[in-house]
Length: 277
Image (tube, rainbow, N blue to C red; front, side, top):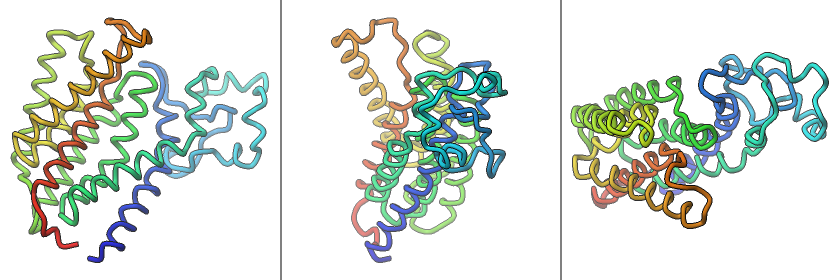
């Protein structure tokens, strides 16, 4: 496969998948117990494929009337089902650039680290869902079951298929075991300190453990250590800047995802040359 075709394919996939992330992130970024959002910040119903979950970052109504976002909604807009009050989080709905850029860069990093191996398809499938999880966790400090459990199942299925092809760089049984081991470790941390480790992180660990375990136990340990190290540095930095204290909650999902990405890139590069691009 030519390097130009390979890079172009990864780039196009990342950009296209990233365009679907902002709307889903907006709809899922609600407090625990609240219904998923069904209308945009201006009150337009979110319609489209998959009951409105898939679509452009901005709804057709807002795209047709760009100035509507700057006007106050009508008297009945706040009472529309699934809309809720306008908050600072609504601004993320129209900001498609960062999610698209993040998804594209993650896909490019995976392509550069893993190369043309069968598991790259699995990583590229998981990338937009992982970015989506990170955005939701950052916005409302929660990792919804509607994302974490399907992500774990998709990881197992995608790696199972990848293992059937020659040239795969990992082990599917070890990946499954890695998910159980890391999930169990996170569950123990949750039992010991539930205020410091959310149960959403435990569920996300089922997927992260499979991703890292695919390449081996040293990679699983290294990726997990990287996540905790990055989270600790971030927390200490916020405390030093007086933007948080020792009891302030910090979304850990993005650091788990970052540790998984670092582990995959390290393992992929370590698997050597001869990727046959």
